[in-house]
Image 1 (spheres, rainbow, N blue to C red):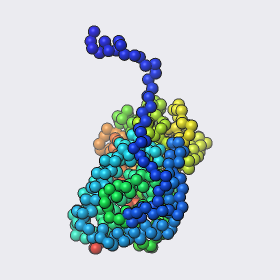
Image 2: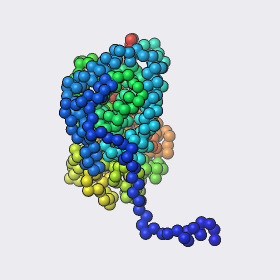
Image 3: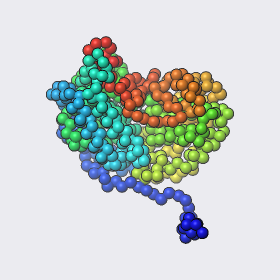
Length: 496
Ligand code: NAI
Ligand code: MG
């Protein structure tokens, strides 16, 4: 008998091959009962507060501030003072040191941040641990590298900081969006007032402790929490020189109207309804993984999610069969469980929106598939969903659902795929799956999308610019392009 066979003889045979729970410990996170606003390097006692919860359990985690216009004003003044008292004039190599420190501290404290991100936002720990945190640190490392090289990035244009940047971020990637905003702003010599989304303020508040550890001069980064009214106060504030916004197209348009004629710089990263296009020569099992990653990653709360699947007709049956089989293996539940694939929906409001659109899909005549799945009793959850028989005119093919819901359409020729893919008011991202390199290049030229992934999906890298066409917004974040919105130039264009 071989070694292996002998062992098998003695090993017990489990009656059922299910996962045992593998929860990540919450112990590492020390929450305060109450948080204020971080202004001028100090905690400002908030005038009003509201509770922030865990969407997986509805448990209250802490009370956080709801910043008023006056509190926003204090934050902007602190940012202005820090800007004028030296931050803007500091040599780039000195600013870079702070950014490098922040990046290193984020790496050191990554488990703590990952647990808190999952707790407050509902995303699976494997994603906050393996995606959000490494990318957030990478963003600070990357822009630290640019801080002393701005003259080389923009030769003969004398790049200068813009001033005070007002930054408003959403709840789907709270710490990562904070990094996308703060890292380039600081690298370019600006100071910042940032407002996290109302449902996910906690990692931004913990980040203030990172700033303290890094000994960043007071006032360079200020954080005010609150809802849309706080965001609106920041947008309106005359002391802000630039607004960077990521969120809904509706609010993006309102901000654009508000800022028209004020001379404030603006970048908008808004919604999407991306097509993920599968050709009949694609590696199908890989493509199915790409489809799953494209729409069920982060519960589909992803602006660049591959929410419209376009499958070539000849492989339609096979792809759908493989996809349905794969869906039965997704584990929905506790975000802190390391086995969880799909976590909690971020808020009751978002769950209601998803539910409404899914009902609309059924009424309009699409065919729904949901794998058998037991959801936790408390909290906000939605079963991963696939709609087939979807017409282009249906709401589920047109509107951003921002949840784990995929709409499947078919096509026969590459031209038809392009036409359908571009038939949307958005233009943030797209995916192409094919063995043919020439077809990838042709598709990338035809698709009106800021990012086109080939034989992969939802891949992010700080060196690569990200941003939209049409109603998905304008301006780019990431890469050298991501510096421009935070700079003004002596000659030529002011960079938009
Ligand atoms: P939202 O656009 O209202 O919220 C995003 C951020 O903007 C939050 O920090 C919010 O407090 C702030 N905000 C809200 N109203 C504002 C105003 N008038 N002025 C300034 N700031 C304001 O998005 P919401 O309501 O959370 O989600 C609605 C839909 O928007 C989602 O279902 C999804 O379709 C889309 N969305 C897209 C995101 C993206 O990454 N592109 C992120 C979040 C939502
Ligand atoms: Mg809103």
